[in-house]
Amino acid sequence: MRRVGLKPSFGRVPQWPLGAFASVAVAGPMARTVRDTALMFSALARHDRRDPLCLPDDPRDWTAGLEYGVAGLRVALLRRPGFDAPVDWEGIAAVEQAAHLLLEAGAEVEEAEADLPDVREIFGRIWGAALSKVVAGIPESRRHMLDHGIVEVAEHAAGASALDYMEADAMRLAAANAMARFHARYDLVLCPTVPGPPPLADAPTVDPVQSLWTAWAPWTFAFNLTRGPAITVPMGFTQEGLPRSVQIAASQYRDDLVLRAARSLELAQPFAVADLG
Image (cartoon, rainbow, N blue to C red; front, side):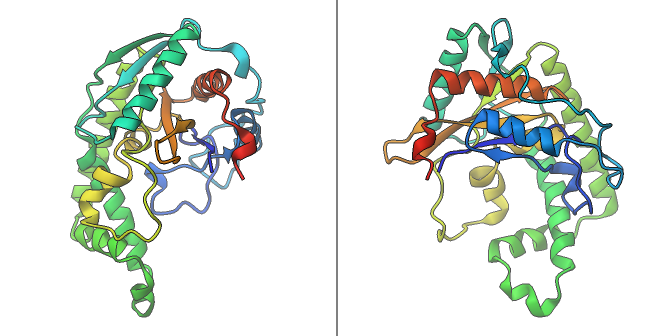
């Protein structure tokens, strides 16, 4: 299956009750096409007073402006999100194909380095502490039902102090500041979504503490930390017939730009909705 998935700007979609991961996670739409994603986003992105972190109401139609294109937008092709994140050759090929398509659509595309700190350490601390809290809230009689990798990550982070967490959150803000400065130069960031093809459902987790930034989410958690919007769009298939994708991010609250860029890619290489099953 191929889908478009939008991680909106933090606060666009209300969440209540706020979970343990609330500071580095959002709710967002997933649909078959960019237009369907934007349509669903229009329904979700409304103020809810129960969520104290929710943005003020903005009853806009997020499908409006999808066809504005990317002409004149500055796009940074990001090879390194603060550390040497892994990606296979087919993932690199997908990004380079997307860069070419955006260039043909009129965008200015160039490789650029963001002055980001090592976000592995930041996300590992914050996410690990949140996971530890979740696991601690599960009765011991049921913890044997949890995935062993999840339990191992939670146990690894269980010893963190409140001071450790506050230091990690200060580092998160520093990463957000660095990303904001990067977006002063570039409207959009283009990079991989995942390091490789979809894993087998029953594949065992090897070293789950390291897997967070080697196999699971090395290309996505920088945008969770910095809280700007990011969208994942299909970009053809691997040689084995598995879906490839790319990720496009923008500065905080410019959800419209990632939707426009995703639509441009969709128009340049249709996502073949009929084969989505």
